[in-house]
Image 1 (cartoon, rainbow, N blue to C red):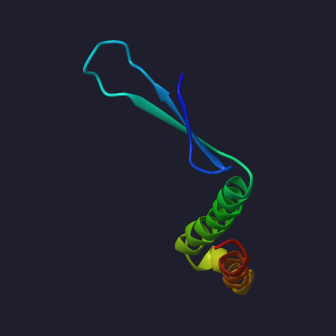
Image 2 (cartoon, one colour):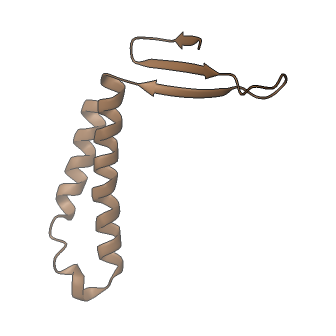
Image 3 (cartoon, rainbow, N blue to C red):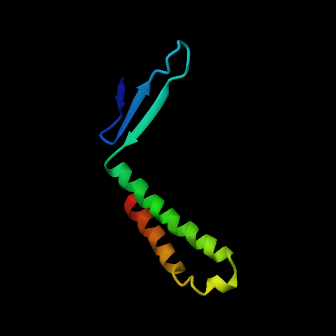
Length: 83
């Protein structure tokens, strides 16, 4: 299986599907700093969309959404340190 290596973080494995003329399948593996960025970004988005879900449930739930200002801070920290 041929491996294309673009840098130390991203490796692409090329798989032949069998028959001649068929499209090759690519599997991308990221590691190191690229993985950390993805994990932090996913964590921030889970927090954001959890807030949006709770906010959409109406005024009975909105009193528990005191952590809105912390979401904005979390987004800014993510943007400054990981992008």
